Image (cartoon, rainbow, N blue to C red; front, side):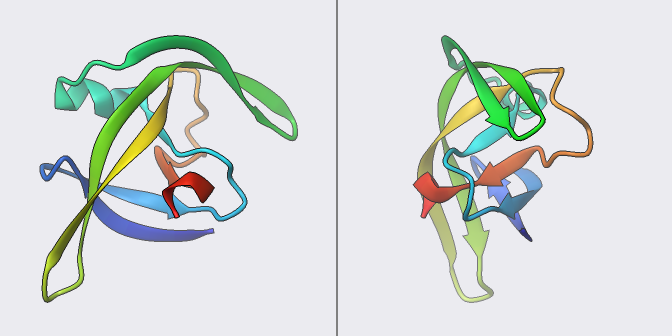
Length: 99
C-alpha cells in the first residue's frame, strides 16, 4: 500500500492510501461530516479477510492532487464507512475504481 497527500473537495487535507487490490474507494464518515456533504443511504458491507463492516452509503467527491506545477481534481464515487471502522485502517482509500 502506498500513501499520498491529497485534498477532499479542495478544503480538507487527508492522507490517502492507494490500494490496487481494493475493489472499492472508501472514506470514513467523520470526513463527510466535516464537509457538510450528505451521502446516499444504502445498507451494505465491506468484506475483508477477517471481518465484515457495515457501510452507510455512497457519496461523490472530488479528490485533488498538486504536483508542484498544477492542481488536478478528480471526481470519484466513495463508499462511506461508519464509526465502527477500525482506527488502524486508512480513512480514505483509492482502490481499483479510482484508477
